[in-house]
Image (cartoon, rainbow over all chains, first blue to last red; front, side, top):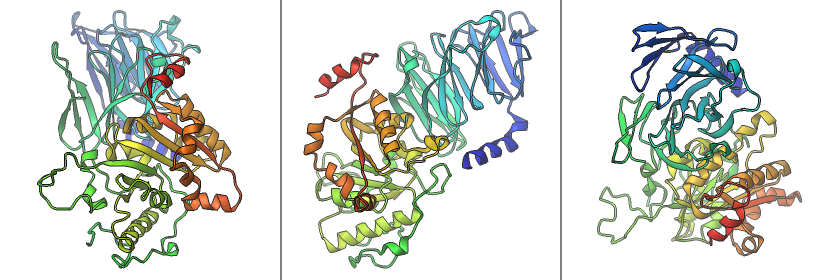
Length: 234
Length: 276
């Protein structure tokens, strides 16, 4: 019914022209670029392209990659997209160590500060969490099913970031909203405590970023379709 | 005084004549997933309280609290989510004359009816019903636009749409995810009232509230002495219809609590002690 209509509208328009994505290793070791389903990594230290190894039988992604992210320390990298797969890579060997299946297409991905968890958002606005674990050959593990953390009701998550101290996770959506949620020590049980809503955009929010001050408090910056950049203290 | 709220429902303003439901017919169901085009406030501070509660907020363009000596402007404290034809608000208004309350309704015509009803009641009962109002909005998407953190002390969900099919369960107004948002806009100690005549939905709502770490069941002794509880089944058109047909109702009344520091099930015992 209405849900099917929403799905069709998304497939017809945006499917062919997924925007290229770029992410830089936090220590400057490498740069990753996603073009459609292809993931390309360039080793800045070695000055050469990296070939990715994926033992889960097949090339990296079978459909457009919609989100990529390095972990804060650069040890891990996550990629996800329209093929409903979330792949976690180790950046020293660029080997895919884990592949998670999502029920719906994925629009955003992030890795927690301690590198223990990967969160991803599906097209219904639900944020899911998986524990990072190395499984032989990057096969999907049945005892590591994603758990639902929270959701932006029926909205598409456009950007997802963890705060520098790892205490919060911020998610922005196409309905002008940013939600900052307390990221608990034991997130498997969910993340029900909202720290604040950062409101002010009059159009979709396209990207968010935390500032990291060594001594002071952290701020959240956001940019959106209303051509404005907002700063929030949360 | 005339309200320039843009209500184009009819020329009965000020005459105290109640609106006739037959001119505001609407289907019982409305699709909460469709992107309706009604204005929404960007943030809670943008909610124009002078439009809704003119007696409390004379709509002059001066600074807030200028010359009035009021320490703080009053804020909305009760929200009726899916208020329908406004029966609950009308019943609550005299019980809490100093509290501002708002109804949220998705259907256009029904919202217009409630607007007219409130205006008519204010006209024929001077000094009363100034504390209730209605807004047309999708509360499943926009509650954080209307209310700030810990603003509400009561939230009401009366006879919500059951969405029987399993694939539509995610459209239910009470769900684990949406309870996060309701908990955010409610103060600790605030109370959420739910009622339905559909047993399966009653079990669903109660289960969600029981599972959610930020809500805890209100004990029976308290429910018995709460003057609001009677209104849940008697004040609204839906409730009266259920009573007429001799149907059973299922209530779940829970209190918003602070997050317990303990993470296992034993925490519910301790959090009851912490919240007096």
